[in-house]
Length: 251
Image (cartoon, rainbow, N blue to C red; front, side, top):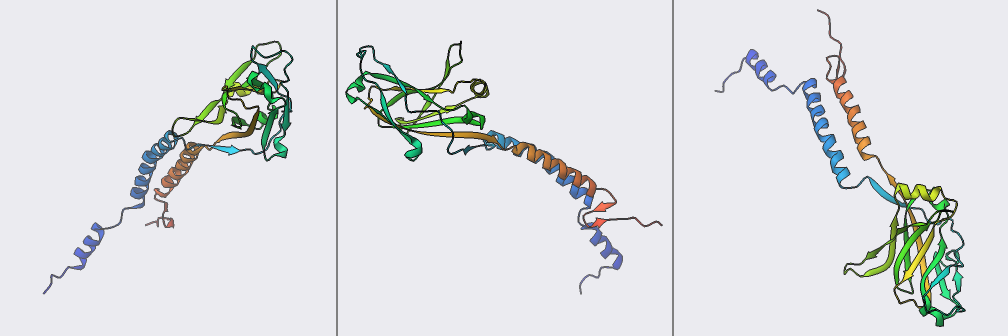
């Protein structure tokens, strides 16, 4: 015959296994939030997930049709170094430059005078990507000229493939100082392109611009944590619980 538990002892057993009270549960949740939120913010910041790039698509460009050539020292003074040009607007976004006298291609050291309109940078652009085809490019620079002062430039960095070979794709990231200098200047920044001794007389250039935006993940998480802590504090009071408003009866 099983052991008989009295009503008094049964009440004690039930009370012994009662679920935690609302203040205890809310305190545990608050503790988890206080510890977990900073750790989560740190993980996001360390993994650089708070920034992404937004492609802007088409944009206003200065006239690209008449770049000028920096000649080799042995180039004849009367050598024809002019270019024919096909606009990217008429060619799927790819600009095509062809030396009118291909026999003079050996005298080309660099090409300058290709401009990007200042309005591009007013839209928040901080990265410029140029892809070349038709000739091997050695060096690309974004040149800012200020009237009465010496010019300055930012060098593009070539993207390499898995074997460390150049891909003829060059990237330029501009910091806040450089962007301020460009925006404050009346003259549009120019692109200077140096060739690696393999200029074929023809080259194609595809241009892309990107604007970076930062999503404030850390601020969002900290703000949400503050709201949840306030909710936990309210639910931990004797008057408000997880089941709603509680009013104590007077005895």
